[in-house]
View (cartoon, rainbow, N blue to C red):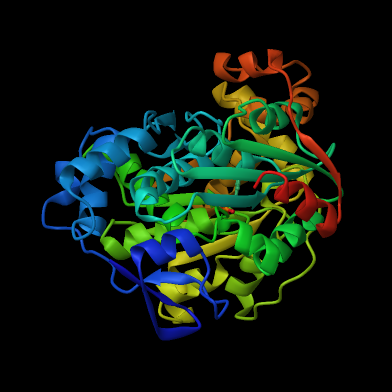
Length: 434
Ligand SMILES: *Cc1c(COP(=O)(O)O)cnc(C)c1O
């Protein structure tokens, strides 16, 4: 398996380079040099299979030259100890694919755990311990911390903005210990991200550590996210109407993964790119003009992205063919008021409690189905509502049940290294870990 850079298709690298370096030197993004095609009968063959079983078959299509069947088995067993169940809201017509049954209760577990499992297989081939730096506004950090906890040969430093992540999110970052270090930064998420970027360019740090990144740019977070689109169809009746996926989107990794599944041969009628007021992609799909902007703060804050990092990948998956892209993917956006109304409506009509991100996905599906009748709609549920506890509790007027594995964290003691929001301070305390 090899990868090329979207800025220079002649820049082709190995799996290990794409895995450990995340980003090509030329600032492009890695893409697979070829996309495996489903063998005949593949879709029929996965009926009722679990996420791990389907992931085994798909990983084999991608990595059969790189890993033995036993390694692939080890990888998917580590990555997917949970499933992604499809919940029916209206038979044959409207479903929610719940992606939040992993350890951190958000879909980011899927990509983070697969990447961690792969790094664990390859870390023995690295001459030094790998030190991963990651800035988080909430969900990424939890998934990465839990995915990489106790992975041999890998250490993780997570930077998060003080007072700006939810309490349970903070516990996920700060209570594991061992090879996971949390830096509580007196600053914004943007400051955290700037500090991580500066670290990769700093000679002292790159000498002291073999630095790597686990942000959503890594191609090995994207590829496994395509697996649950297959898992969704495996749970439908064989005679279902053509599938439509609505994906609540921020950096567009999740949606790009769906398009990747479609490029492999997954039968899909349409994708809906559903966003909050950070609507650069819906605007692009209707106008053909891509105009990145500063991000706006919304209720669905994991989707507050003004310049989505996977946009280039989305274009590349359509070979820059705007007509094809805009006919398969339709874009819609919603306000916070619409999101809150939808959360209440879903509870009253279906007894379904959705987080704000998931509600945006369902709004996207409903707006599509108002225009297109004969299809089977699947909205992706990206996080458990309890993760956004204070906000969600206020909307429903009572507290949402917290799953046991999240509730136990509340008891654990927080360990974080508090630093000011400057690169100099981060560098100094990081060097103390060397
Ligand atoms: C990260 C995240 C999203 C956005 O996913 P992208 O792949 O960045 O588009 C949506 N919902 C939740 C809960 C998230 O954590």
